[in-house]
Image (tube, rainbow over all chains, first blue to last red):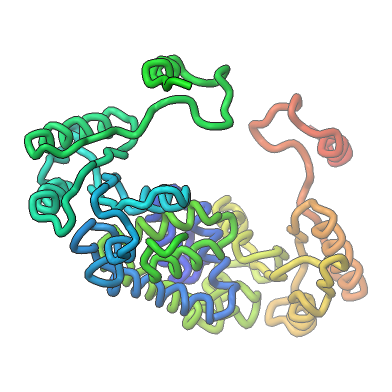
Length: 202
Length: 202
């Protein structure tokens, strides 16, 4: 932006542009939008930004983002604490909750193993999972590995599965196959082969 | 979002989702990004939001966004105050400034006439333009209408041109034609016809 633009607008634009997927053009558009919105919007937006950093921490049990020491899922006595679904990010919990079918609890890794990016077992919440499994209030019967079916996701799932084997806990992996409602025509060959390998009896 | 999400994250997501072109999925992603960023980022972002509403107003002369009573362009003695380029939004000034060729001044309408959306002459900065033309420090020789070549843009340009005729000021319209570097193959027929109408002698 040139010097024909007011400095506060330039600074706001730069802040927007730091967000993932927001380029300079979009950031400029968003900054102008805020400029032309009621003052109340800018104020509530600013308060929300501060609030999210000040009052949200990680649940002491599952490492999900939470306002309290223990998150809503871990606190809920109706959830089956004997089944733990291991996910990569807090957002993944959202996806499972939307199914309205899963009644177990979660564990958030906050990342995946990736030697290329120098992300090692100590950098994600694997230690927290092990401590949790060794000192549970409710005995854990099953750990479901629900990381993405990518190289890093698969490697992390395999690594954790190997760590848990000696503890005598059942470790499972979410099924890979054809998405519901999709067409075989558009499925890639690796997915198709997995769908055949994981076939179920009718 | 379900109740497995911390409330401050939900509120921040809703604030992001109010921005133009940002849907709920993207807003969620941005809120999680802020949550995982350093606290300094959230703080500077929040301060920028407040600052833009508190310290940016409209230039008393050209109605562009400005930190001071008179904006940088109007204050600059090197700009030719005898030529006024009339634009729709402050962002359009950015575009003209990027050409590094225009040395006149601007006038921002902050909108276009649109009877359908109930935007009438009093809702945009036409009155301010007339006052400016009738009581200028420097006599104005030319007013360039640089609104978009849309129905509303054309109508607003025509409306203002008719208002300025009795004042004896030259009113011009930016040229419509083929964009530089583009191919005739992809030009629509209306643009092509305008390009022929506005042809120049070589």
